[in-house]
Amino acid sequence: QVQLVESGGGLVQPGGSLRLSCTASGSIFSINAMGWSRQAPGKQRELVAAFTSGGMTNYADSVKGRFTISRDNAKNTVSLQMNNLKREDTAVYYCNAQGYAGTIVPEIFSAWGQGTQVTVSS
Image (cartoon, rainbow, N blue to C red; front, side):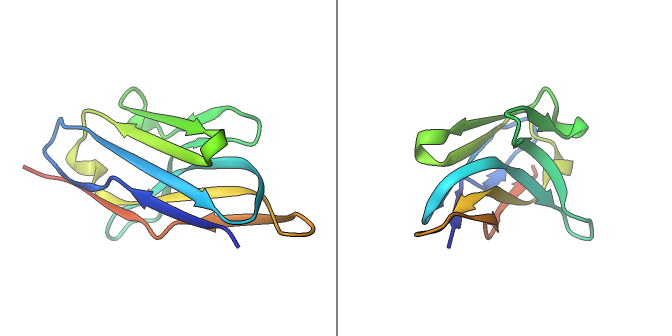
């Protein structure tokens, strides 16, 4: 079983910065894709930024130029540096990872973290 633990959320003023981190643990054989999504109150969950299985990065248009995703494959960690935060960035941010895991025969997994709250307010 794969578990994702997020950290780094909090309250920040407009224009401020936050850094989110997510670490995957368990019987992981490989992680092919890893990234962040968010869900604001009353809205659907949306992709924010992610590394694809092909090794490319995807960003939502609304965060391009402000957010940067990075990854440490050796530590099964993905981070999201968020700069110039806006009120509309307020949401619960979720980490997601997909890959292969298992103690005997690797099987496909897709796991989500429990989420971390980011609030942008003055």
